[in-house]
Length: 225
Image (tube, rainbow, N blue to C red; front, side, top):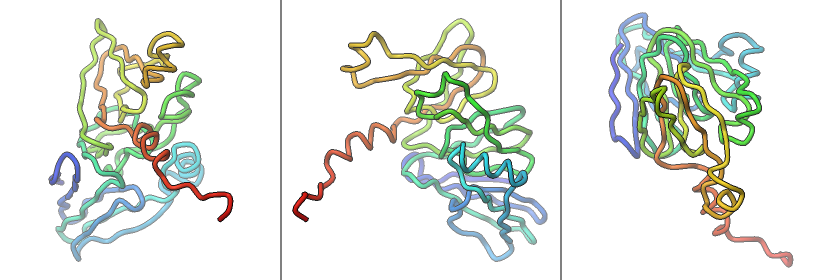
């Protein structure tokens, strides 16, 4: 399997080249195109309960699409938002925020995992996508993606709206950016402080910040209409 990511970082397009017999599994709606030798099958991967957890708790689709190359060919994918795509060769576990998973090989199990009360105020919500196994994983962002390697001696702080994913070697706690006054007036709100050893992926734009800017500008229906 080979891949190419074009039009980075704002309008990224992922093209995966498959040899005969190879497969890749993708989030529903992510496909842009494929060649004639590629067949698509839609199913509830991991079983009914796993798909239900991924849909209801993780914010992903109940069904996933598996693309199989009956002969060598290509299939392309794109995220729903303008942004980047990142490839990561998983050998273990990576936790991905809702909406950032695009595709992976069938060797990667995608399920949800309870993040604990610490994530209640984070943009990730109570549940995270747990991508475990060995193989390529493709993630998307809103804006560009920046990988950061966290060291145990240097905790790293990220606004919760800018987290894409993180490796299992790091842990985090969600806290206020400062005191109550700073939280209410700085525009920063809540942050995640990462500790341990591993990689964290950030996105340069925040959907929460964009919606906070956009919604007040939308036309409002008057009571007389």
